[in-house]
Length: 303
Image (cartoon, rainbow, N blue to C red; front, side, top):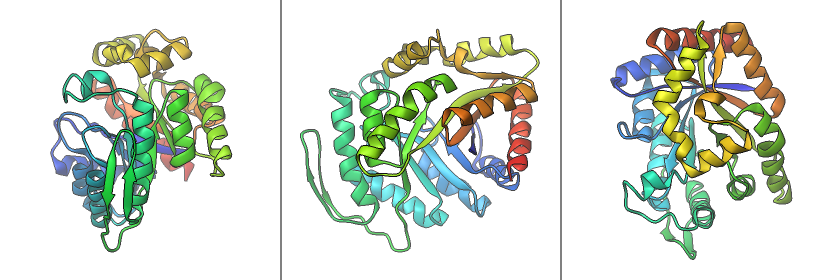
C-alpha cells in the first residue's frame, strides 16, 4: 500500500508549500494531495509547488465538477501536466449541495447522471482525443492538445453505489472520506471491483483518506476534529457513509494515538483493500508536526 500525505495549504506561501512537498519526497511519501477549497486553486498550487521537487506525484482531491466544464478542466489539467512533467493525479467529485447550490447557485439535480456524462466527456479530452459529446446534462465539443503531456490519472470521489459504479467503470479508482477500514472491506472494495470487472477494467485504486493525529490525548484531538469538521456530518453523501459505518460524526473515523497505534490502524486499511492511505494531519500545531514526522518515518520504512 502506498502512503499519501495531505498538505494543508491554508495560510502558507508557495515556498512553504514547496518545502513541505520536498520534505515529503525526501522521506519516500508516494503522493502529495491538495484540497480544492476557498483559497488556493489546487491545480495552480500544484504547478507552483512541483518545481521544488523532482519525482513525487501530485494530486488534487477533489476538483468539484459543476463549476468547471470538461473542456476547461481538461485544458487546465493538461497544462499542469506539461509544467510538472506528467506527475498529476486528477481527482474529481460532485461536492455538496451546500457548496454547489448554496455558493455557486447551480443545480445538483441527478448528480450521478451528471457525473457519468462528465466523465464520459472528460476522459477522452484528457487523452487528446476530439470530443463531440451530447448528453442529457451537458454538451462538450472540442479538442485539447498540449504537446509533451500524458493523460493524468483520473480518480473519482465516490461513497455511494452509483458513484462507485461510475468510478469502477470509467476511472482509475476512488478516494474516500470519513470511511473506516470496515466500510472499505464490506462495501467500497466489493462494489467498485464488481463495476470494474463487469467493464473489463483492472482492479481500481482505493485511496483511503483519514484525519490522523499522533497524540497522547486522543479525546482532546477528537474534540478538535468535531469542532473543525463536524459540519461535514450534515452533508448528505458524508452522512450516508457515516451511517453505513455506524459513526456519529467525522471525529469517530479519525486515526488517533501514539506512533504504534497509528501504524497498526494504517495496516488495517491495507488489509481492508485500500491501495493508498492518505494521511491528513490534524490537531494542535505540535500534534500536526509530530504526525508529519511519523508519516515521513513510516514512508521511509516502506522503501
